[in-house]
Length: 438
Image (cartoon, rainbow, N blue to C red; front, side, top):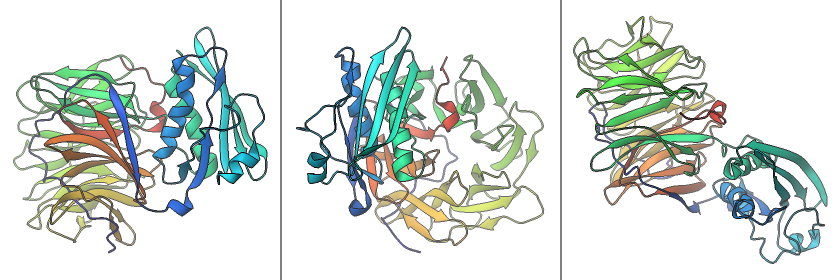
């Protein structure tokens, strides 16, 4: 096993976290720490977009694109201040950018239509002195941030060779002194909206594979129950309300089933049910606590946390039946909260080492493990839909904040909020881009 960075996890769940964070107002972007691989990153300059009008929204497009690229371990932003042109249809001074060791330049224009915003952008290759992408995008409702994220996604895929995840969304739980809230926001923390708010704790939100629903746990009736919230019509449905614990919901890859931790028969075990709560069946059967299920992308296996070895460790069970649960982690006395990567080759988890809890990454085939973070209390890992970054909660000064680290460990950023505490982040699939939240 190789230790890339010191690792860490959070406590063996089941027990119900009082989840915190002020459903406050604006969110601000944070700085990005590049902690390796600088020589492999592609230098890119993003010029200010021109347009029909000089508005704050238009001037922000380039900044948002550049901020997105700063969170990538594949790209490096070059300061375009003082460039001979500011975007639009003018000629690019390739010699000027070449002198500043810039490989690529993004330029464009933005126009407001009657009910949308339209951006025309070009990606220039400095060495070849030619355009390698030229495209026009429009977005309903004049959402300039979403438009900028889409531009960043397209450029990133061309340069890095894999899709960006900038136009996706995240959700997380906050709690103030008197209420908890389930928040949905863009992947950079902006465009925040409250999906659901209650005075009782909320926990463990998980997006459905189509991005149209979120399953989560609410204590609003004095005990934990699992709800499914429909983002299109705003409806909520209880799918698990058994005696004892109802927690840790996880969607199957086809969205037709939900795995969860229930204690209805005594002891915490993993059960499977249809997405509407029907046809309940038990998956694990041990005298220990089994919790935190995560489906493999092919739907053939489930990872989960269990203390059957005397401490929290991660196991894998086949849904075909017949096979015993296979232990996956052996390094240390605490490994929990497994999350499969979108390609099924890895899982992220929380690991304890001297000094705190951190995020680890294990390759399933080889069992090689890397530790990506070394915070005092890092927890709740959630993969980006492209599998290249992990969203997690890091605790600072007794409050949880959001952070993102690339799976190669080379770029880390924090999403600063004004919430008192944050818990249980989840990253939406690509399919959720344009879903209106109601």
